[in-house]
Amino acid sequence: MIKDFTEMPVWQKAMEIAEKCFNISENLPKKEDYALTSQLRRSAESISANIAEGFGRRTAKDKSRFYDISRGSAFETKSHLIYGNKVKYFSENECLEIQDVIGEVIHDLNKITSYLNKTQS
Image 1 (cartoon, rainbow, N blue to C red):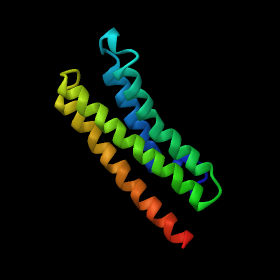
Image 2: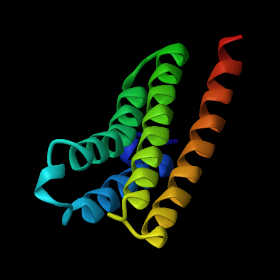
Image 3: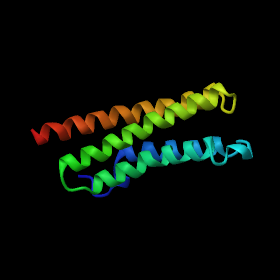
Image 4: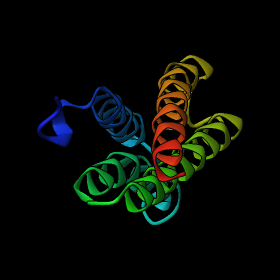
């Protein structure tokens, strides 16, 4: 039985994404501070934050809602990574490594929300 959101493997993967996104955005040009740097870091951190908030909710419906928001943030983060690669800020390998973990998180969140939706029926 999981007692705290930090024990959830999906949250741990989401935190890994946030850390990796922070690190690859560390050397972006200063002109990107309020653009790509901020957007990437915020969307990446939002994945784990919404998982944590969902964990703390009492009802399956509330939990599912926050896990869906987290899923949306994962897709947003993936889009920022693709953009960063296209404008040559990030290497393809850096992006693919993070996108693989994003894919795992999305898959895990899909499984969790499917289970929660079944319990609501």
